[in-house]
Image 1 (cartoon, rainbow, N blue to C red):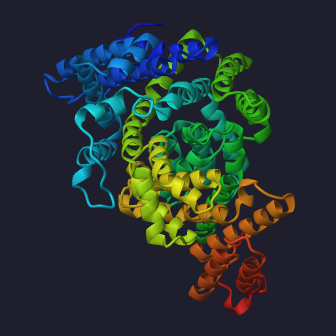
Image 2: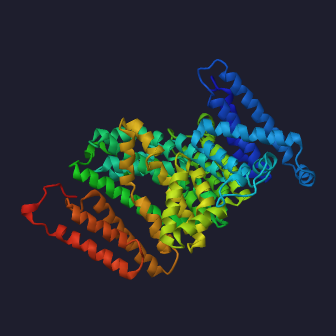
Image 3: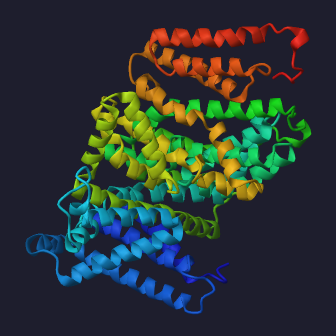
Length: 621
């Protein structure tokens, strides 16, 4: 059973077991917990992601990096003791401390380059240079400037840098949920969710695409990376969509949009929910509750988009005999729903900590797997889940740690206040213009980054100014999260769309633009809850209900305008009218809602009573 096991597998098992043990029997001190977490990740990254695979000295260099990572890890573990922290607070850092700190930064940047690409590394280096050359910059960005010693101390030896909140959330919450996802996958839950999606949506014209949306969003909410989820679920959803008639570009775009949507889908939200709760200092359940309706609007829009795409193309649903029967699927795998119900109930109703809830869900997953002979979590499967979860966490660990460098620099230099001042000045204090400028900044800053890193950076720079201009903190943070996430489907750096294009064998840029089209609601929803916090379930019940109804109508008008189809094709003028109505429904005021509804009726009513002689002949719903 254990033949052919490598050292990396053993280390991955140890990493998974370490986090499960500390979740069950008590976390270590903050610096030590985060330090062990990061050391495990660095060692695995240097072992699994070679410097240059075909270079004869590459493995030697990788072994050197592993040794240095262990050295730094042991040193920082000693440094994290209360006695050493007190000593350094009194006498400052020694030359050896500074050397170890500099080595930690270099090792982290190299590890991040290997698993996340150059984008985040370049961004971190830009911020380090900003800290060093501050006095030489234009007055708007200038600061006193900091030397290497001060920079290393800030980013490597405080809880405001590498060992800050992002890595802390990764070391306590995120890693447990990634392990939970791995246990679910190894127990066979992935196949159950896909079959359930087919049983529910397969008969529809857009059945395969709906299946992709459902399955990819469910798996994407746990993965923490839209692009990573695309290459996981897209391997079976994209070929199926192509086989039933979707153009390769459209199939790739739908998968990219669904996987990206998983990053904003409660309860996990690609790990961003945990970080958001920690930053805002509120209960995790509050974040989940606030994020529910915006996520519903997103997926209603995407569902309508892909359905109308199928209707316009004259597609048909899958034959009944090729589809699984829902009650049979549920009978065979109902127990896979128990861990999900457990995690939602413990978080939202019982207000357990995310760490405790995830640990309980892992235990429940193992227990319920014995309801079926095929799904039983044997020792081999448990070890596979530990290994898979540990390896899947590496991108998030590296991203969170490197994002900590950026946050440390922002804190040290006061850049956050300068950025807020710049937005306020450029917008003249007008909320709409400030939202637009912040949205563009978040799209740019989030390009090419994993969800957690994209959110951390944009929340650090973009959210404070929105709060300053009157948004509630939760609305401001969800706003920047949405725009940080949809950078994954927004050209020119639409990494989720480009990953999907590789599987669909479609042009990358074209796939990116189609993904932007299908996910256009994600550009609108943040403005909807910014102007109407009722969509975050904040306010009087009647106001919340009215906001939900008008928002759903606005989504319908928006989709119809973008697709050029309501009950049948519409002309350009009608599309413009529908889009105008959708925009008026963004504002939650009664007058703007009335205008939006009237504009919608101008197009919808004639569609209900068509002139048969001018009927387009396009198949109906």
